[in-house]
Length: 156
Image (cartoon, rainbow, N blue to C red; front, side, top):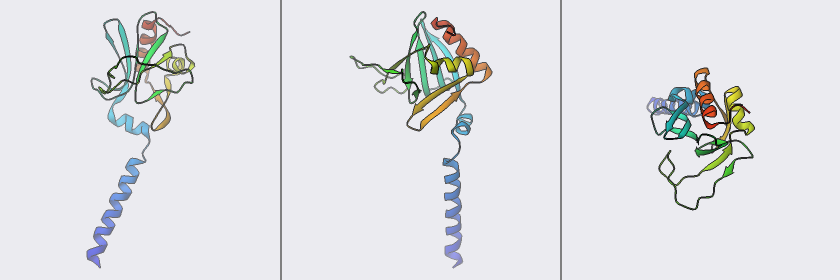
């Protein structure tokens, strides 16, 4: 009897631990992986990304050029806005995040969803996991301000 009870109890303990781990809050998982907002520039293009710094682990990347009120959005999550425009691609483009064919979207930087990122440091997004918010720390909000200023949209 003991021969069967010990493995059964151990298995139940592992199942309970796994269930607890997979049910943890996404904010906790994000904090553990070091994800956050990062700003970079490539030529004349500014890139605001949410992910692990200096890696290909990005959930979202927003790019813009000076003076353009629209940004291009790539990633597994997209801003939760009815004004998000799925870009039609006539040529095969490669997604800079994962190397697959790009699923490119466009959004106005004056969109209320995007302005909430500037004003409150929160961007409502949606993806396979549903809708949630990406938040910014005080230091990250400085980077976000620089991005919007560079794009020429200011704070509308």
